[in-house]
Image (cartoon, rainbow, N blue to C red):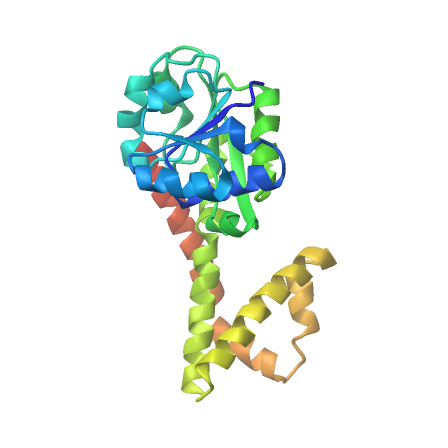
Length: 269
């Protein structure tokens, strides 16, 4: 594949991917071009990473091998219409939530190879979790190329496009659930009269440590929870309070609501 890679849209997620592909030596800075309506943002990224910049999408993608669509879902059609058949050979990668590959293919023209990605914000620190799904014309080699890039900023799984709604609910929106938990822990610490800075340090490290233990142990979360839940102990008291407040059911309901909203956005987009 032609190594020239263009990012249309130079926001935070584009920078996260940019950082990953350069750090992983997947692409050289000289092979990367970003486009944006903000010249100052392009200058900022050029200074940090040595990449090129342009405010002309059509000119930028004319000889690209891969094009990342890092624009807001509501801007997608407006961005793609002028690019119809400009580069039929490019592989297009969309990170826009709720925009089906069929819609992108229609805008780009017959035979457009599209892969859709649902990333999440921890990609900003190379700890992302993403789902990727092929469009109608994408080939196995296209998925391999996208997987290589997404694995430079975390982990990824290949799913059917229909399952990206579930990916959105689990990992796409998932970081917010963790932040919500930490918010609640800090509010609890405040009620206990605990020092806020110390509470924050303990809560954040607890989340990091628990996630690492879950990943590296290979054990089920139920098994790990049981190991620290002594009968009649403090953890058992906390879990009983969570169960009484239906916290577990609330989390499940939240995932179902996120998945349903993802479908709604796709249908109405």
